[in-house]
Length: 154
Ligand code: HEM
Ligand code: ISQ
Image 1 (cartoon, helix red, strand yellow):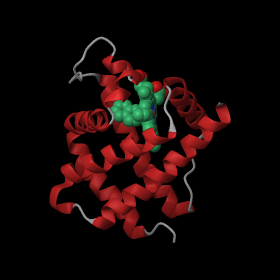
Image 2: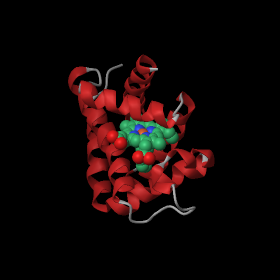
Image 3: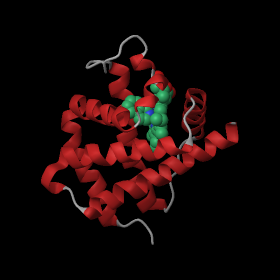
């Protein structure tokens, strides 16, 4: 079935409440990725010169938040157009960055799991199965677009 207005609203309202706390959210998200897949450490330049996750790295924060924002955008487009549309330049850049860093398909499941866990923790009692499903669907469609571009470029 299509992406409903209700699903779009679940994503939008949870993101609105989460974005009040961007620094903590981005750190939790990133830490959770590395918790699930410690081997992913080597891919991120934020960790180049240290073993610890930097607590105030503006690039880490910006990129982490972009994943949330883009997933939220994807939800809006899924409801409006029935598909995720990303500008050609953005998609080409995302494809080449992830390809160059050595990202492969199973990594996308890791990031998805980390995203969902971070949201669950952040929204507390607001969390529901419907909310999880809405974020999952939006993320899956966004990930599919990036993966397709990576295959195109490889
Ligand atoms: C970089 C988004 C999935 C690992 C980035 C950037 C964005 C982004 C916006 C910054 C690009 C730039 O520098 O111009 C996303 C989105 C994803 C996704 C929206 C899924 C829907 C993944 C996955 C992995 C990953 C599955 C693997 C664990 C990385 C790495 C970088 C990166 C290693 C480079 C960071 C650095 O500067 O060192 N991603 N990403 N991403 N992403 Fe992702
Ligand atoms: C880049 N791509 C996917 C997930 C991320 C999480 C934190 C920082 C950067 C990221």
